[in-house]
Amino acid sequence: MKADGAKGKNSTMRVLITGGAGFIGSHLIETHLQRGDEVRAVDNLHTGTAENIEPFLSNPGFEFIKADITDWPGLAPAAQWADRIYHMAAIVGVHRVVEDSMKVLTSNFEGTKRVLEAACSGNPAPRVILASSSEVYGFNEKASFAESDDLVFGAKHQFRWTYAISKLAEEQLGLAYYLNRALPVTAVRFFNTTGPRQLGVHGMVVPRFVAAAAAGEPITIYGDGAQTRSFCDVRDTVRMLNQVAESADAVGEVVNVGNDREISMRGLAELAIERAGSGSPIEYISYEQAYGRHFDDITHRRPDLTKLFGLIGYRPQWSLEDTLDDLIDGQRSVARSLSVGA
Ligand SMILES: NC(=O)c1ccc[n+]([C@@H]2O[C@H](COP(=O)([O-])OP(=O)(O)OC[C@H]3O[C@@H](n4cnc5c(N)ncnc54)[C@H](O)[C@@H]3O)[C@@H](O)[C@H]2O)c1
Image (cartoon, rainbow, N blue to C red; front, side, top):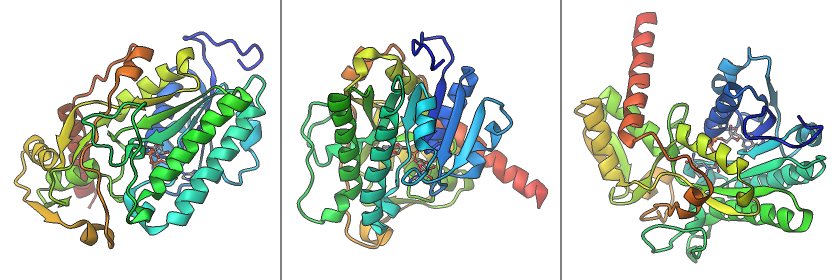
């Protein structure tokens, strides 16, 4: 494929995924292998897991490399091989971010710089999709966030912003490579993405709530539960990403990717309990108790998807209820198989 560089929408291609053993990365692997593409995934298994990529290892079109993108010598050859790169590798999760601000800033920025530099050595250069985050909108008070909106970071408790700043720096670096080196980059601002293979251990709210609701155990909300988020099923996210990557108009742009249905954390806990048919009580703890230090949470977060839907035809297919039902079923079938094996 690389020889002529011209790829129609239906032709197969070579795809490099950084952070491939992670949550979103593993769904990108699945989608592209289903398309018949060749896929290489690199991951240092920091938050990603071997189980996430295990189902793909027998596919002859798939290769996994356990390496850290900040020093992997194979990065430039892999980027030269690729028609498309999804750069998903990053240190994520509020717990990790609060614990190791220095690593978040340096590793996320350095990894992105190496990926972009490697992509520039491709001939032609691969299409690059770079993962950013809705966290960059910070304390913006608008009801929904559009890409042209101001990014509002608080002055106090500056370590709160290390992840958002690392993501903003990655975006800006990607756009600089587009402007100065003509690299075809799009930075995608993910709003909360959820679905199978997301882990609750790093603080992600949906898997935490689902595990508790399915088991009939207490659901713990951080703060008062009035804060809102907008959840997009990862199976919708990866289809939207594929179409963003196919869009010539998206090159050199920042684009929100998500689902614009908004729900409070209290509402999410109640919905998880209702879908699980369980009697889980809801408990509240402060952010200090949850994270071990003061934490300014963002009160609301809903994407304005006007720009995204102007670029792609795909619309989210998964409702939050469908996603919760699917996760609860998955959780219960794991619990059943463990009890049979015990
Ligand atoms: N899931 C969401 O709701 C969400 C929201 C906003 C932004 N994002 C962004 O999307 C991307 C994917 O997130 P995710 O939810 O799949 O998280 P994830 O933690 O499951 O995936 C990130 C992967 O990157 C790997 N990784 C981290 N540093 C690495 C390094 N230096 N070298 C190699 N691999 C490395 C981790 O092991 C992990 O597998 C991240 O860049 C994240 O910042 C995700």
